[in-house]
Image 1 (tube, helix red, strand yellow):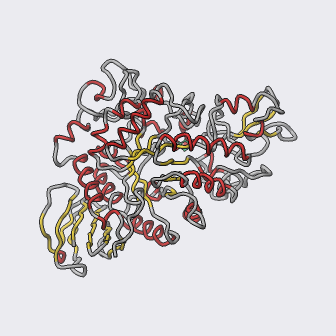
Image 2 (cartoon, rainbow, N blue to C red):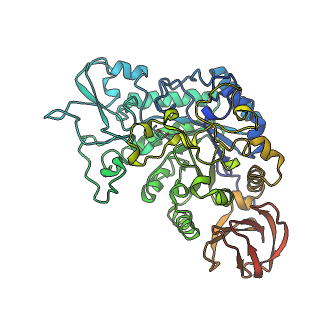
Image 3 (cartoon, protein in one colour):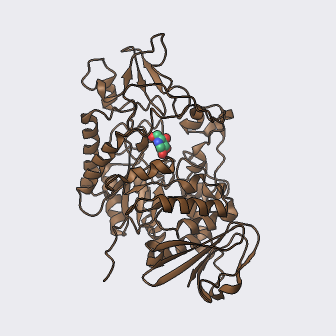
Length: 536
Ligand code: NOJ
Protein backbone atom coordinates (compact mmCIF):
# COMPACT_ATOMS: atom_id res chain seq x y z
CA UNK A 1 0.00 0.00 0.00
CA UNK A 2 1.29 3.47 -0.85
CA UNK A 3 1.89 5.91 2.00
CA UNK A 4 -0.66 8.75 1.99
CA UNK A 5 0.53 11.95 0.28
CA UNK A 6 1.68 14.36 2.98
CA UNK A 7 0.36 17.94 2.99
CA UNK A 8 2.48 20.18 0.74
CA UNK A 9 4.07 22.09 3.62
CA UNK A 10 5.70 18.93 4.99
CA UNK A 11 7.71 18.29 1.86
CA UNK A 12 8.11 21.98 1.06
CA UNK A 13 11.12 24.26 1.03
CA UNK A 14 10.17 27.68 2.41
CA UNK A 15 12.02 30.80 1.25
CA UNK A 16 11.73 33.94 3.35
CA UNK A 17 11.88 37.00 1.16
CA UNK A 18 12.41 40.45 2.68
CA UNK A 19 10.34 42.54 0.24
CA UNK A 20 12.17 45.84 0.83
CA UNK A 21 15.42 44.26 -0.29
CA UNK A 22 14.51 41.92 -3.11
CA UNK A 23 13.95 44.02 -6.24
CA UNK A 24 13.00 47.64 -6.76
CA UNK A 25 10.86 48.20 -9.86
CA UNK A 26 10.00 51.92 -9.61
CA UNK A 27 13.35 53.47 -8.76
CA UNK A 28 12.60 54.61 -5.21
CA UNK A 29 15.41 52.52 -3.74
CA UNK A 30 13.05 50.08 -2.05
CA UNK A 31 11.98 46.63 -3.17
CA UNK A 32 8.33 46.16 -4.14
CA UNK A 33 5.77 43.60 -5.28
CA UNK A 34 6.13 44.24 -9.03
CA UNK A 35 9.87 43.76 -8.48
CA UNK A 36 9.23 40.31 -7.02
CA UNK A 37 6.80 39.55 -9.84
CA UNK A 38 9.57 40.28 -12.34
CA UNK A 39 11.79 37.74 -10.60
CA UNK A 40 9.46 34.75 -10.57
CA UNK A 41 11.74 32.77 -12.87
CA UNK A 42 14.58 33.28 -10.42
CA UNK A 43 12.43 32.11 -7.51
CA UNK A 44 11.31 29.07 -9.49
CA UNK A 45 14.93 28.30 -10.37
CA UNK A 46 15.69 27.92 -6.65
CA UNK A 47 13.37 24.87 -6.50
CA UNK A 48 11.59 26.33 -3.51
CA UNK A 49 7.96 25.51 -2.77
CA UNK A 50 6.75 28.59 -0.93
CA UNK A 51 7.68 32.22 -0.51
CA UNK A 52 7.09 33.83 2.88
CA UNK A 53 6.90 37.61 2.60
CA UNK A 54 7.84 39.74 5.60
CA UNK A 55 5.08 42.33 6.21
CA UNK A 56 3.80 44.28 3.20
CA UNK A 57 0.90 46.06 4.94
CA UNK A 58 0.36 49.82 5.36
CA UNK A 59 2.63 50.92 8.17
CA UNK A 60 4.59 53.96 9.36
CA UNK A 61 7.57 51.57 9.16
CA UNK A 62 8.86 52.27 12.64
CA UNK A 63 9.69 48.56 12.79
CA UNK A 64 9.72 47.97 9.04
CA UNK A 65 6.22 46.61 8.70
CA UNK A 66 5.93 44.90 12.08
CA UNK A 67 3.95 48.00 13.06
CA UNK A 68 0.78 47.40 11.04
CA UNK A 69 -1.62 50.29 10.44
CA UNK A 70 -4.06 48.27 8.30
CA UNK A 71 -4.19 44.48 8.26
CA UNK A 72 -5.98 44.30 4.92
CA UNK A 73 -4.02 46.58 2.63
CA UNK A 74 -0.67 46.94 0.90
CA UNK A 75 1.81 49.68 1.78
CA UNK A 76 2.28 52.02 -1.21
CA UNK A 77 6.03 51.38 -1.05
CA UNK A 78 5.27 47.82 -2.12
CA UNK A 79 2.49 48.57 -4.60
CA UNK A 80 -1.23 47.92 -4.56
CA UNK A 81 -3.64 45.15 -3.75
CA UNK A 82 -3.83 44.44 -7.50
CA UNK A 83 -0.05 44.01 -7.56
CA UNK A 84 -0.46 41.59 -4.69
CA UNK A 85 -3.12 39.61 -6.56
CA UNK A 86 -0.88 39.48 -9.63
CA UNK A 87 2.04 38.25 -7.54
CA UNK A 88 -0.06 35.57 -5.89
CA UNK A 89 -1.32 34.39 -9.26
CA UNK A 90 2.19 34.46 -10.70
CA UNK A 91 3.63 32.42 -7.84
CA UNK A 92 0.82 29.90 -8.12
CA UNK A 93 1.27 29.55 -11.87
CA UNK A 94 4.98 28.91 -11.25
CA UNK A 95 4.07 26.16 -8.78
CA UNK A 96 4.90 28.12 -5.63
CA UNK A 97 2.80 29.03 -2.61
CA UNK A 98 2.62 32.35 -0.78
CA UNK A 99 2.77 32.78 2.98
CA UNK A 100 2.11 36.15 4.64
CA UNK A 101 3.27 37.55 7.95
CA UNK A 102 0.55 38.04 10.54
CA UNK A 103 1.35 40.40 13.43
CA UNK A 104 -1.38 39.90 16.05
CA UNK A 105 0.42 40.98 19.23
CA UNK A 106 0.63 44.68 18.45
CA UNK A 107 -0.40 47.26 15.87
CA UNK A 108 1.09 50.57 14.85
CA UNK A 109 0.14 53.52 17.03
CA UNK A 110 -1.33 54.88 13.78
CA UNK A 111 -3.77 51.99 13.40
CA UNK A 112 -7.34 53.38 13.56
CA UNK A 113 -8.02 51.00 16.47
CA UNK A 114 -5.31 52.62 18.57
CA UNK A 115 -6.22 56.16 17.48
CA UNK A 116 -9.69 55.42 18.81
CA UNK A 117 -8.46 53.66 21.91
CA UNK A 118 -6.23 56.50 23.06
CA UNK A 119 -8.96 59.09 22.56
CA UNK A 120 -10.62 58.64 25.97
CA UNK A 121 -10.90 56.20 28.84
CA UNK A 122 -14.48 55.43 27.86
CA UNK A 123 -13.86 54.91 24.17
CA UNK A 124 -15.37 51.67 22.88
CA UNK A 125 -11.93 50.51 21.75
CA UNK A 126 -10.20 51.49 25.03
CA UNK A 127 -9.96 47.83 26.05
CA UNK A 128 -8.54 46.77 22.71
CA UNK A 129 -5.12 47.75 24.08
CA UNK A 130 -3.48 47.39 27.49
CA UNK A 131 -3.91 50.62 29.46
CA UNK A 132 -2.95 50.98 33.13
CA UNK A 133 -2.78 53.73 35.69
CA UNK A 134 0.64 54.93 36.81
CA UNK A 135 2.18 53.15 39.82
CA UNK A 136 0.99 54.58 43.18
CA UNK A 137 4.09 56.75 43.51
CA UNK A 138 4.04 57.66 39.80
CA UNK A 139 5.95 56.04 36.93
CA UNK A 140 5.19 52.92 34.89
CA UNK A 141 2.60 50.49 36.31
CA UNK A 142 5.15 47.67 36.74
CA UNK A 143 8.73 46.70 35.90
CA UNK A 144 8.15 45.11 32.49
CA UNK A 145 10.81 45.81 29.87
CA UNK A 146 10.77 46.36 26.13
CA UNK A 147 12.87 44.09 23.91
CA UNK A 148 14.04 47.27 22.23
CA UNK A 149 15.34 48.95 25.40
CA UNK A 150 13.71 50.80 28.29
CA UNK A 151 10.37 50.18 29.98
CA UNK A 152 7.54 48.41 28.17
CA UNK A 153 5.19 51.26 29.06
CA UNK A 154 4.64 54.72 27.60
CA UNK A 155 2.60 57.43 29.23
CA UNK A 156 -0.20 59.02 27.23
CA UNK A 157 -0.93 62.54 28.43
CA UNK A 158 -4.40 62.75 26.90
CA UNK A 159 -5.91 60.17 29.24
CA UNK A 160 -3.25 60.02 31.95
CA UNK A 161 -2.55 56.30 31.58
CA UNK A 162 0.28 54.12 30.35
CA UNK A 163 -0.03 51.66 27.43
CA UNK A 164 2.02 48.51 26.97
CA UNK A 165 4.51 47.93 24.16
CA UNK A 166 7.26 45.32 24.26
CA UNK A 167 8.90 46.64 21.09
CA UNK A 168 8.95 50.33 20.05
CA UNK A 169 6.54 52.76 21.75
CA UNK A 170 4.88 53.02 18.32
CA UNK A 171 3.82 49.35 18.61
CA UNK A 172 1.08 49.29 21.28
CA UNK A 173 0.04 45.78 22.31
CA UNK A 174 -3.43 44.49 21.63
CA UNK A 175 -5.57 43.06 24.38
CA UNK A 176 -6.21 39.58 23.08
CA UNK A 177 -8.33 38.72 26.09
CA UNK A 178 -10.99 40.80 24.29
CA UNK A 179 -13.01 38.56 21.98
CA UNK A 180 -13.64 41.47 19.59
CA UNK A 181 -9.88 41.96 19.08
CA UNK A 182 -9.33 38.32 18.26
CA UNK A 183 -12.40 38.42 16.01
CA UNK A 184 -10.99 41.37 14.07
CA UNK A 185 -7.66 39.59 13.57
CA UNK A 186 -9.36 36.41 12.43
CA UNK A 187 -11.31 38.51 9.92
CA UNK A 188 -8.02 39.89 8.62
CA UNK A 189 -6.81 36.31 8.14
CA UNK A 190 -10.00 35.49 6.21
CA UNK A 191 -9.45 38.54 4.01
CA UNK A 192 -6.14 37.12 2.76
CA UNK A 193 -7.22 33.49 2.77
CA UNK A 194 -10.19 34.46 0.57
CA UNK A 195 -7.72 36.05 -1.86
CA UNK A 196 -5.88 32.75 -1.99
CA UNK A 197 -2.83 33.02 0.27
CA UNK A 198 -1.49 29.67 1.39
CA UNK A 199 -0.81 30.44 5.02
CA UNK A 200 0.65 32.71 7.66
CA UNK A 201 3.76 33.07 9.73
CA UNK A 202 2.52 34.44 13.07
CA UNK A 203 4.72 37.00 14.81
CA UNK A 204 5.71 36.54 18.50
CA UNK A 205 2.89 34.15 19.47
CA UNK A 206 4.48 33.50 22.86
CA UNK A 207 3.71 37.08 23.88
CA UNK A 208 0.04 37.18 22.92
CA UNK A 209 -1.31 37.12 26.50
CA UNK A 210 0.13 38.86 29.56
CA UNK A 211 -0.45 38.28 33.23
CA UNK A 212 -4.03 39.36 34.03
CA UNK A 213 -2.85 41.08 37.23
CA UNK A 214 0.15 42.81 35.62
CA UNK A 215 2.50 41.59 38.35
CA UNK A 216 6.19 42.52 38.30
CA UNK A 217 8.66 40.14 36.71
CA UNK A 218 11.42 38.71 38.92
CA UNK A 219 15.09 39.58 38.54
CA UNK A 220 17.06 37.04 36.51
CA UNK A 221 19.71 35.54 38.84
CA UNK A 222 21.72 34.44 35.78
CA UNK A 223 21.67 37.76 33.96
CA UNK A 224 24.79 38.30 31.84
CA UNK A 225 24.86 41.97 32.85
CA UNK A 226 24.77 43.00 29.17
CA UNK A 227 21.43 42.30 27.50
CA UNK A 228 19.06 44.87 29.10
CA UNK A 229 15.95 42.78 28.42
CA UNK A 230 17.56 39.72 29.99
CA UNK A 231 17.73 41.43 33.39
CA UNK A 232 14.28 40.01 34.22
CA UNK A 233 12.70 36.61 33.90
CA UNK A 234 9.70 37.01 31.63
CA UNK A 235 7.24 34.78 33.39
CA UNK A 236 4.44 37.40 33.34
CA UNK A 237 4.71 38.57 29.74
CA UNK A 238 5.65 35.36 27.95
CA UNK A 239 4.12 31.95 27.46
CA UNK A 240 0.90 32.44 29.45
CA UNK A 241 -1.28 29.31 29.12
CA UNK A 242 -4.30 31.24 27.78
CA UNK A 243 -2.50 32.12 24.55
CA UNK A 244 -2.96 28.58 23.22
CA UNK A 245 -6.70 29.12 22.80
CA UNK A 246 -5.86 32.06 20.52
CA UNK A 247 -3.53 29.99 18.39
CA UNK A 248 -6.22 27.31 18.18
CA UNK A 249 -8.71 29.90 16.94
CA UNK A 250 -6.24 30.95 14.23
CA UNK A 251 -5.74 27.33 13.29
CA UNK A 252 -9.48 26.74 13.04
CA UNK A 253 -9.77 29.61 10.55
CA UNK A 254 -6.75 28.35 8.59
CA UNK A 255 -8.12 24.82 8.43
CA UNK A 256 -11.55 26.00 7.33
CA UNK A 257 -10.09 26.73 3.87
CA UNK A 258 -9.35 24.05 1.28
CA UNK A 259 -5.85 23.24 0.05
CA UNK A 260 -3.92 22.60 3.27
CA UNK A 261 -3.28 26.22 4.22
CA UNK A 262 -0.45 26.38 6.73
CA UNK A 263 -0.07 28.09 10.09
CA UNK A 264 3.51 28.75 11.16
CA UNK A 265 4.54 30.28 14.49
CA UNK A 266 7.57 32.42 15.23
CA UNK A 267 8.15 30.36 18.35
CA UNK A 268 11.38 31.78 19.63
CA UNK A 269 11.12 29.79 22.87
CA UNK A 270 12.94 27.00 24.79
CA UNK A 271 12.49 23.32 23.82
CA UNK A 272 9.97 22.42 26.52
CA UNK A 273 7.72 25.31 25.50
CA UNK A 274 8.26 24.85 21.77
CA UNK A 275 6.57 21.46 21.63
CA UNK A 276 3.46 22.85 23.31
CA UNK A 277 2.82 25.05 20.29
CA UNK A 278 1.84 22.02 18.22
CA UNK A 279 -1.19 21.84 20.54
CA UNK A 280 -2.18 18.87 22.66
CA UNK A 281 -4.41 17.67 19.82
CA UNK A 282 -2.00 18.97 17.11
CA UNK A 283 -4.48 21.78 16.69
CA UNK A 284 -2.16 24.79 16.98
CA UNK A 285 0.76 25.56 14.64
CA UNK A 286 1.51 23.12 11.84
CA UNK A 287 5.07 24.38 12.08
CA UNK A 288 6.18 26.10 15.27
CA UNK A 289 9.44 27.51 13.96
CA UNK A 290 12.49 25.79 15.38
CA UNK A 291 15.40 28.21 15.81
CA UNK A 292 17.87 25.70 17.27
CA UNK A 293 20.26 26.05 14.30
CA UNK A 294 20.21 29.82 14.59
CA UNK A 295 21.46 29.84 18.16
CA UNK A 296 23.76 26.83 17.92
CA UNK A 297 27.49 26.94 18.34
CA UNK A 298 28.77 25.85 14.92
CA UNK A 299 30.30 22.59 16.01
CA UNK A 300 29.58 19.05 14.78
CA UNK A 301 28.96 17.59 18.24
CA UNK A 302 26.75 20.46 19.32
CA UNK A 303 24.67 20.32 16.13
CA UNK A 304 24.22 16.58 16.45
CA UNK A 305 23.16 16.96 20.07
CA UNK A 306 20.54 19.59 19.33
CA UNK A 307 19.11 17.65 16.39
CA UNK A 308 18.79 14.50 18.45
CA UNK A 309 17.25 16.41 21.35
CA UNK A 310 14.72 18.05 19.05
CA UNK A 311 13.87 14.76 17.35
CA UNK A 312 13.41 13.14 20.77
CA UNK A 313 11.07 15.75 22.22
CA UNK A 314 8.80 16.10 19.17
CA UNK A 315 5.32 14.92 20.05
CA UNK A 316 3.76 12.12 18.02
CA UNK A 317 2.55 13.30 14.60
CA UNK A 318 4.32 16.62 15.03
CA UNK A 319 6.20 17.54 11.85
CA UNK A 320 9.69 18.99 12.41
CA UNK A 321 11.09 22.12 10.82
CA UNK A 322 14.42 23.94 10.70
CA UNK A 323 15.33 27.61 10.30
CA UNK A 324 18.87 28.69 9.45
CA UNK A 325 18.44 32.44 9.07
CA UNK A 326 15.91 35.23 9.15
CA UNK A 327 15.58 39.02 9.15
CA UNK A 328 16.36 39.30 12.88
CA UNK A 329 19.60 37.32 12.99
CA UNK A 330 23.17 37.52 11.71
CA UNK A 331 23.53 35.73 8.38
CA UNK A 332 24.66 32.12 8.46
CA UNK A 333 27.75 32.79 6.29
CA UNK A 334 28.89 35.28 8.94
CA UNK A 335 27.86 33.14 11.90
CA UNK A 336 29.40 29.88 10.76
CA UNK A 337 32.03 31.43 8.48
CA UNK A 338 32.08 31.67 4.70
CA UNK A 339 33.88 28.29 4.46
CA UNK A 340 30.94 26.62 6.19
CA UNK A 341 28.12 28.27 4.21
CA UNK A 342 27.67 25.26 1.91
CA UNK A 343 27.87 22.76 4.74
CA UNK A 344 25.18 24.76 6.55
CA UNK A 345 22.90 24.80 3.49
CA UNK A 346 23.46 21.08 2.97
CA UNK A 347 22.54 20.45 6.59
CA UNK A 348 19.36 22.55 6.46
CA UNK A 349 18.25 20.96 3.20
CA UNK A 350 18.88 17.35 4.15
CA UNK A 351 17.43 17.28 7.66
CA UNK A 352 14.07 15.74 8.46
CA UNK A 353 11.51 18.52 8.56
CA UNK A 354 10.48 21.55 6.54
CA UNK A 355 13.46 23.86 5.94
CA UNK A 356 13.11 27.65 5.96
CA UNK A 357 15.78 29.46 3.90
CA UNK A 358 16.51 33.18 4.09
CA UNK A 359 16.85 35.21 0.86
CA UNK A 360 20.45 35.85 -0.14
CA UNK A 361 21.82 32.86 1.74
CA UNK A 362 21.67 31.04 -1.61
CA UNK A 363 24.50 33.37 -2.70
CA UNK A 364 26.38 33.05 0.58
CA UNK A 365 25.60 36.67 1.48
CA UNK A 366 27.32 37.86 4.64
CA UNK A 367 26.37 40.53 7.18
CA UNK A 368 26.89 43.95 5.65
CA UNK A 369 28.42 46.65 7.81
CA UNK A 370 25.91 49.49 7.89
CA UNK A 371 27.38 52.82 9.01
CA UNK A 372 25.65 54.51 11.93
CA UNK A 373 24.24 57.30 9.72
CA UNK A 374 22.45 54.76 7.51
CA UNK A 375 21.13 52.54 10.27
CA UNK A 376 17.38 51.91 10.24
CA UNK A 377 16.81 49.10 12.72
CA UNK A 378 14.91 50.47 15.75
CA UNK A 379 16.15 47.63 17.92
CA UNK A 380 19.78 48.66 17.47
CA UNK A 381 19.13 52.40 17.31
CA UNK A 382 17.20 52.50 20.58
CA UNK A 383 19.92 50.82 22.62
CA UNK A 384 23.44 51.87 23.56
CA UNK A 385 26.14 50.37 21.35
CA UNK A 386 27.67 48.88 24.51
CA UNK A 387 24.65 46.60 24.90
CA UNK A 388 26.06 44.69 21.93
CA UNK A 389 22.68 44.45 20.22
CA UNK A 390 22.88 43.06 16.69
CA UNK A 391 21.99 45.62 14.04
CA UNK A 392 19.41 43.70 12.03
CA UNK A 393 20.00 45.96 9.00
CA UNK A 394 23.18 43.96 8.37
CA UNK A 395 21.11 40.94 7.41
CA UNK A 396 18.44 42.87 5.48
CA UNK A 397 20.48 44.47 2.71
CA UNK A 398 19.49 44.40 -0.98
CA UNK A 399 20.00 41.25 -3.00
CA UNK A 400 22.78 41.79 -5.55
CA UNK A 401 21.48 40.74 -8.97
CA UNK A 402 24.40 41.66 -11.21
CA UNK A 403 27.69 43.53 -11.38
CA UNK A 404 26.12 46.75 -12.74
CA UNK A 405 25.26 49.94 -10.87
CA UNK A 406 23.42 49.27 -7.61
CA UNK A 407 23.84 45.58 -8.38
CA UNK A 408 20.65 45.65 -10.44
CA UNK A 409 18.58 46.07 -7.27
CA UNK A 410 17.52 49.62 -8.07
CA UNK A 411 18.25 52.18 -10.77
CA UNK A 412 21.62 53.79 -11.20
CA UNK A 413 21.98 56.99 -9.18
CA UNK A 414 19.30 56.03 -6.65
CA UNK A 415 20.36 55.37 -3.06
CA UNK A 416 19.09 51.95 -1.97
CA UNK A 417 17.21 52.03 1.35
CA UNK A 418 20.09 50.07 2.93
CA UNK A 419 23.63 49.91 1.54
CA UNK A 420 24.62 47.07 -0.73
CA UNK A 421 27.39 44.80 0.42
CA UNK A 422 30.80 45.73 -0.98
CA UNK A 423 31.19 42.29 -2.56
CA UNK A 424 28.24 42.77 -4.97
CA UNK A 425 30.45 42.87 -8.08
CA UNK A 426 31.67 39.35 -7.25
CA UNK A 427 28.81 37.84 -5.31
CA UNK A 428 25.68 38.34 -7.40
CA UNK A 429 23.00 36.28 -9.09
CA UNK A 430 24.20 36.85 -12.68
CA UNK A 431 27.77 35.88 -11.97
CA UNK A 432 26.91 32.87 -9.87
CA UNK A 433 24.39 31.69 -12.47
CA UNK A 434 27.20 31.42 -15.01
CA UNK A 435 29.43 29.42 -12.72
CA UNK A 436 28.44 25.76 -12.48
CA UNK A 437 30.24 25.41 -9.14
CA UNK A 438 29.02 28.58 -7.44
CA UNK A 439 27.15 28.74 -4.15
CA UNK A 440 23.99 29.44 -6.15
CA UNK A 441 24.55 26.43 -8.38
CA UNK A 442 25.16 24.36 -5.28
CA UNK A 443 21.99 25.68 -3.63
CA UNK A 444 19.90 24.88 -6.70
CA UNK A 445 21.32 21.37 -6.82
CA UNK A 446 20.71 20.58 -3.19
CA UNK A 447 17.14 21.93 -3.30
CA UNK A 448 16.49 19.92 -6.44
CA UNK A 449 17.86 16.78 -4.74
CA UNK A 450 15.59 17.36 -1.76
CA UNK A 451 12.56 17.86 -3.97
CA UNK A 452 13.27 14.71 -6.02
CA UNK A 453 14.16 12.24 -3.28
CA UNK A 454 11.45 11.15 -0.85
CA UNK A 455 14.22 9.93 1.47
CA UNK A 456 15.27 13.57 1.84
CA UNK A 457 11.93 15.32 1.90
CA UNK A 458 10.01 12.90 4.08
CA UNK A 459 12.26 10.00 5.08
CA UNK A 460 13.37 8.84 8.51
CA UNK A 461 16.43 10.29 10.19
CA UNK A 462 19.22 8.41 11.97
CA UNK A 463 22.56 9.69 13.27
CA UNK A 464 25.69 7.75 12.27
CA UNK A 465 28.69 7.22 14.55
CA UNK A 466 31.94 8.27 12.92
CA UNK A 467 34.37 8.70 15.83
CA UNK A 468 35.87 11.65 13.97
CA UNK A 469 35.95 15.02 15.66
CA UNK A 470 34.31 17.68 13.53
CA UNK A 471 32.28 15.25 11.44
CA UNK A 472 28.54 14.85 11.68
CA UNK A 473 26.84 12.14 9.62
CA UNK A 474 23.32 10.81 9.34
CA UNK A 475 21.09 8.81 7.06
CA UNK A 476 17.71 9.57 5.62
CA UNK A 477 15.58 6.69 4.37
CA UNK A 478 12.22 6.17 2.70
CA UNK A 479 10.66 3.43 0.62
CA UNK A 480 13.82 1.36 0.34
CA UNK A 481 15.99 4.36 -0.59
CA UNK A 482 18.80 5.30 1.79
CA UNK A 483 20.84 8.45 1.64
CA UNK A 484 23.91 9.22 3.73
CA UNK A 485 24.94 12.77 4.56
CA UNK A 486 28.45 13.45 5.83
CA UNK A 487 29.30 16.98 6.95
CA UNK A 488 32.75 18.18 7.86
CA UNK A 489 32.53 21.12 10.25
CA UNK A 490 36.30 21.26 10.53
CA UNK A 491 38.98 22.80 8.36
CA UNK A 492 41.00 19.57 8.15
CA UNK A 493 40.52 16.53 5.98
CA UNK A 494 39.21 13.24 7.44
CA UNK A 495 39.41 9.63 6.37
CA UNK A 496 36.37 7.74 7.62
CA UNK A 497 35.46 4.11 7.83
CA UNK A 498 31.71 3.90 7.34
CA UNK A 499 31.73 0.37 5.95
CA UNK A 500 29.16 -0.71 8.55
CA UNK A 501 26.57 1.07 6.44
CA UNK A 502 27.55 -0.41 3.06
CA UNK A 503 30.62 -1.23 1.00
CA UNK A 504 30.23 1.64 -1.38
CA UNK A 505 28.02 4.58 -2.26
CA UNK A 506 27.35 6.96 -5.12
CA UNK A 507 28.10 10.65 -4.61
CA UNK A 508 24.91 12.59 -5.37
CA UNK A 509 26.42 15.93 -4.41
CA UNK A 510 29.53 17.37 -2.84
CA UNK A 511 29.65 20.92 -1.52
CA UNK A 512 32.54 21.70 -3.89
CA UNK A 513 30.49 20.19 -6.75
CA UNK A 514 33.55 18.50 -8.22
CA UNK A 515 33.35 15.01 -6.79
CA UNK A 516 31.13 12.46 -8.48
CA UNK A 517 31.01 8.70 -8.92
CA UNK A 518 31.31 5.76 -6.56
CA UNK A 519 33.30 5.78 -3.36
CA UNK A 520 34.35 3.05 -0.99
CA UNK A 521 32.92 3.63 2.47
CA UNK A 522 35.79 1.82 4.20
CA UNK A 523 38.04 4.70 3.22
CA UNK A 524 35.81 7.71 2.70
CA UNK A 525 37.84 10.86 2.26
CA UNK A 526 36.07 14.02 3.38
CA UNK A 527 37.82 17.27 2.54
CA UNK A 528 38.07 20.25 4.86
CA UNK A 529 34.72 22.07 5.13
CA UNK A 530 33.16 19.52 2.81
CA UNK A 531 29.72 18.00 2.83
CA UNK A 532 28.67 14.93 0.88
CA UNK A 533 25.29 13.47 -0.02
CA UNK A 534 25.68 9.82 -0.88
CA UNK A 535 23.27 7.24 -2.20
CA UNK A 536 23.75 4.00 -0.27
C1 NOJ B 1 9.52 39.53 15.54
C2 NOJ B 1 9.92 40.00 14.18
O1 NOJ B 1 10.57 38.96 13.50
C3 NOJ B 1 10.80 41.22 14.37
O2 NOJ B 1 11.39 41.62 13.16
C4 NOJ B 1 9.96 42.32 14.96
O3 NOJ B 1 10.78 43.44 15.25
C5 NOJ B 1 9.28 41.86 16.25
N1 NOJ B 1 8.72 40.54 16.13
C6 NOJ B 1 8.17 42.79 16.60
O4 NOJ B 1 7.09 42.59 15.73
